[in-house]
Image 1 (tube, helix red, strand yellow):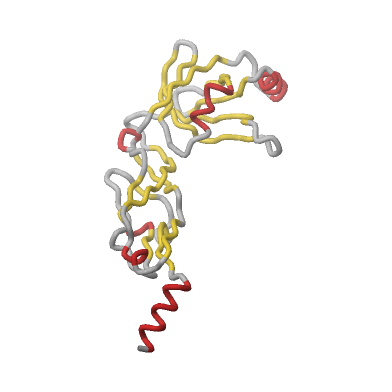
Image 2 (image 1 turned 60 degrees about the vertical axis):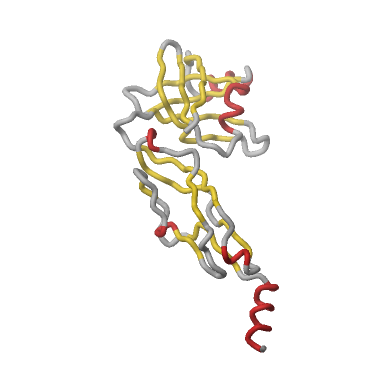
Amino acid sequence: MKTFALTGSLRESIGKKAAKAYRKASLIPAVIYGGSEVVHFNVTKDSVRKLVYTPEVQIVDLIIGDKNSKAIVKELQFHPVTDEILHIDFLQISEDKPVVIEIPVSLEGLAEGVREGGKLSQELRKLKVKGVYTNFPEKLSINVEKLGLGKVIQVGDLNFENLEILNAKENVVVAVKLTRAARGAAATETKA
């Protein structure tokens, strides 16, 4: 999994008034928890742009003052009108404690059902998994080559080494749906 280096500066004061002042100075208030203590700090808008606006999940090497820790982005708060980042919550991670994270799903291969005239439909773009961060892949690859017309792959059908999938087992990840052309071709074959 990719890592992202981020440097933050400790916040001298916390609260609504202080957060508003930091935002005016083009800083984003942030917090890291999950370790021995909760640390409040600021990051610049430019420094988090490539971390926030990407579909990839990244481990953050966070440097705050003289402390260095590994973390993941747990929650982002955006302004409802301007979509400006208001606050970032980080969760400190370690090799001995499992963590829950969403990882993107990648489909591989050409499905049999698509060759027969169906349409491939990816229902879930990310899967929620639990595990130790050292076992996290950049993406969860699913081979769809044997997926026939009208067939689906559900969460319960998937298994990834050292990861526990937390989505409901009956949720559909990918399906090959019948198209009008495929239905018409099937109807003419049965008449003949």
